[in-house]
Length: 197
Image (cartoon, rainbow, N blue to C red; front, side, top):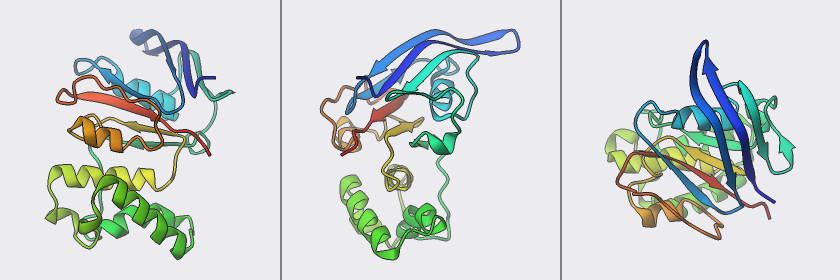
């Protein structure tokens, strides 16, 4: 079974068709990169998968569930936008745990999640720094960490693939069985499908 299936997906704004007949199938553990010129609909497609944009016609399936009308919060998807928003007055640790804190996740669980994600993204030594003390790539990893601590079923990123090198991008696809990437140096949009244990 596919973890994500898109069937004949269309998106229009008024009379302007942005996406026409998109079909995509991704299995659990796969890393998919969408590469194309600016304005071709890559981010729009991910926003539709995440539920942030409506579907004009076609179907989006996550697992065995049609999600066209499912609210974003109920899709179990984490999305990192190119313009990642980090809180400048908070440390890296606080930025990563912000959403967990808001949801009332116990402190011990937060600490374990930070430890796991920091090791995965190789940012353990940055946890007590603030965003202004980080490079652009390090800030991007922190933004990904905020999404990954949610342990989403599907992870979408509209930034560079998802970090600038294939080895690091493959690290960001935890529990993946396969990994493919189209030119990590080119601007692209990526999607990682995670398996549930």
